[in-house]
Image 1 (cartoon, rainbow, N blue to C red):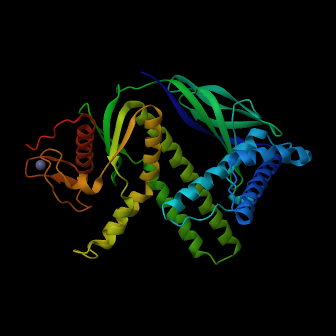
Image 2 (image 1 turned 30 degrees about the vertical axis):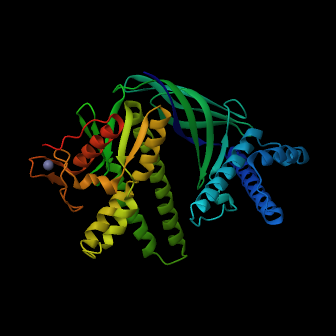
Length: 410
Ligand SMILES: [Zn+2]
């Protein structure tokens, strides 16, 4: 099956000293644009209770560009639109949460430190990326390359992609003195290896994901070793900060080291999740999982009405580990990619179905505490807890989708 898939490739940029100044300048201009556009929306709302649309702001952008040719004209026009669109998205999200009765924070003015970067639309419009070729496991792949940016010049980029594709758009990202390029490419030659299986997943502590597939196979996907190592290192760095005298030179240095490491881990994790979700999306037609009850799990650490405070310390420890591996983010990426490749992402009703308490063989409820890692049922079914939960979700999903009868017998 031929599929289109969009994926992101991250490169580290190595600008020269002069280019760093120019990149900083561009970032500042985008920050000013964000703040000015935000101001305009707020003013219009206060004065005439009118909400300004993205299209309105794009139109006035042309006006502004005409009036201020010296400063703003060095910015690429569609790149400015990307920033305006991002603000528009922030507002849409804000109004959506208000409509749901939540009280979200209003979109904020940004300092240059809080400005994550700026984006570009069509390849060739103000930017061009030229990938270099390399070898990986004997196969040709994209390795490093050069980014040409309007007003900045040619910047060296380092990074690797298993598979290249048609370059679509990009973002230039800034974080504590480091610059990265996030490239969106479209690949057309990805094969759906499983021919469109149904797959159910459970996420847990020992394994990041436990996959159960409709062809009868299972696949545990472990947490990469560096997840745990990274957590230990982060703890060390944070302890070093708390040992130092507040606001001393050493304290500042330790704080910077901790923040840098945290940002690096987050990038590595995101990259890992992107690759994993792309692979899964390429194999499945239906992906089913429990709805994300992470919040409930965390809350339940305090105990229930019947059993207040039971296993509080142990449970909150487990919960912290579950939260640390950020399954919510991973699930979002999987959902997005599965749907993008024409598949279906289904969330099972956790409360009704109780996958972690149910026997996948006989469908009976078998209560387990969070620390109990193995499912053992009177019917003779015995397997890993997360795998059992994934099996339950898979059976439920097949029933939902194809009306397959769930046999109550063992
Ligand atoms: Zn059973």
